[in-house]
Amino acid sequence: MKPFPIPVVPFGPGSQAEDENLDYMPMPKDMSVYLQPALPDAASLAAAPRAHAVLQQITQALAAAGAGEGGTVIDITGLPAPDRQVINQVLGEGEVSAKIELDADAQVHVQESVFAGVWRLITLRGEVVTGDHVEIGPVPRLFVEAAAFDLWPDMPEWAGALPPNVVNAPALLHEVRDQLGRWLPGQTPHVINLTLLPVSMEDIAFLDHHLGTGGLLVLSRGYGNCRISSTRLRHCWRVVYYNSADSVILNSVEITDMPDVATAAPEDMRDAHERLADILCVLSETE
Image 1 (tube, rainbow, N blue to C red):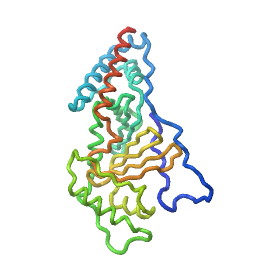
Image 2 (cartoon, rainbow, N blue to C red; image 1 turned 90 degrees about the vertical axis):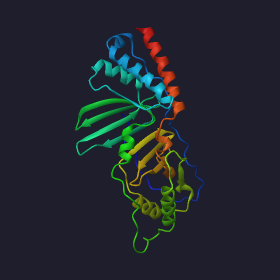
Image 3 (cartoon, one colour; image 1 turned 120 degrees about the vertical axis):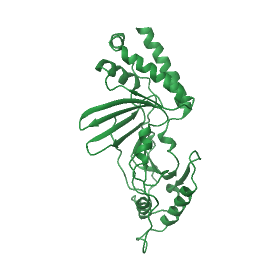
Image 4 (cartoon, rainbow, N blue to C red; image 1 turned 180 degrees about the horizontal axis):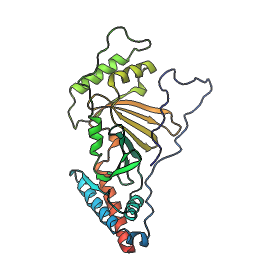
């Protein structure tokens, strides 16, 4: 899987050295795009009949997910190595990934495939793989469970004088509290764009202290990287975009069920269904 996580760099007024010379921000150099996976040859396919059946299941589940039906989980833990290799080759690795700690020894590596809405979840205990699943849907259910784990009943209150250089954070926290108080699932996300606001590094730190760090961190790679992290408040997220030079270009708080950048849209899953169906046709012709 691709390297995880991305580095965190300072942002906000005063965090970057000032230069009197005119200097433009570097344009993105790298971009993740869809590349059709290299298809297995006839010999590999002939040696992996169960993989073909799994890929057909995934295609059918994508059609259902694109139509708005519930997600599907396919257990491929017991597949023989040749079948698993074919599945790896066809699905590839997409833009979105995550690591979720189950306990001190176990974690789940989540990787979206090159087909939107098709997720690979590999459970490891130590270095041993104990589970391997393909899940089809907008987001893995484990994302929702991890984001809902160990939430605070309410935002903590601050007693006493504000720390030095904290000026605008209390007003932002009031906005977050107000939006969370009347938030209804399914509403359009409420986005607080911190990049456009007069906030200091101390304001950001004060804000994050009151939002807390949740149990889910998701990375999305497109132009540069996007870091999506849950907070300790339900429906409250921190979303930070970096360019290809790892400089922060957008820093925000989102009030929503799940940030759009972490989810597969229905139209993307319908497109993924068509592409995977075409690939299966090619595979069938090579048998």
